[in-house]
Length: 361
Image (tube, rainbow, N blue to C red; front, top):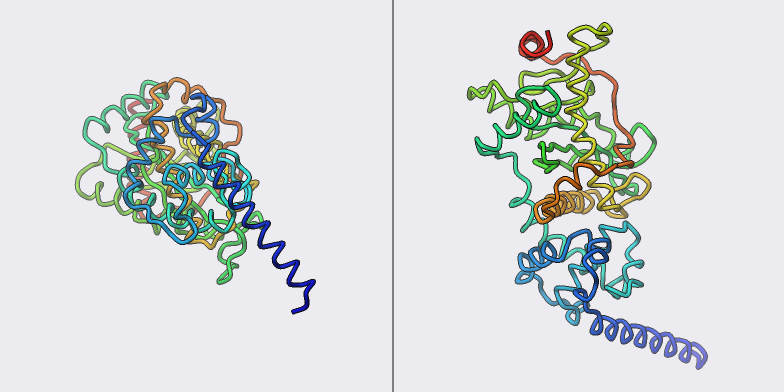
């Protein structure tokens, strides 16, 4: 190697060392709690109490690595939350004065922290299990607000874009020509996400995802066990089942079936708003952006963002603010085409007709 090349290599090494030192100094001077409550929530989506809760849950499990041993858990969490909130590329986090971290270092931090957050938070904050009190409160809330009885939740799907995967990329190409995960979401009357399944490729139809999902099997088993007065609501992209009420196809104007559909649509709107709120809060999931990761890691990000969404709801006591939000970026790629009846259509039709006769005559 000639002297010029040696000089250039030494100069580049010196610049990298200087940049690393600047980031270290910035991190040491960064005091997240000095931010106002509004600024803190804007940057990290969680308020300070929720941030501290998540930090305490994962802090003991965070390990020092050769790249991140100088970065305290608080800054690791802040960097990841900033990435989820903004949806920028990893190098954008490194330019953030609140969490100045190099791109390669952030990459290892994200992997480490994401694994721990999924393991620690998701099972505790996302669950289909509902107490009898929760079930009754849900039914009452939906009935009072929309006139629809027996509802314990709503189901819908959403596409989260990813870069073209190395293997089986055709399976991830959705009907709009984008590579994506087809994510199943079930929410309750509080906009809490009760279930998320991000394991299916974008080429799948929502109804196919639902038919294969463990979540459907839970509701089927509940029905077989005798719970026959509670159901989910789904749009016409799903098949009618005894535990999943869908709207009537092409009802006559001002008919009882049309009234049923109006009430159904009003009630089911909450899952669309929940998805809109989730994506607005964690913009890495928005349709205009792509997650630049292989599908399994992208699914992890979706799962963690859903858990964080529930944590945000829990630690933000002003539910009226959430419920009155104008979510403008609601589900940009819904699949509204109707599907063929399932083998359980007749049983579901009987229940649907009973609802019409009792509540919409």
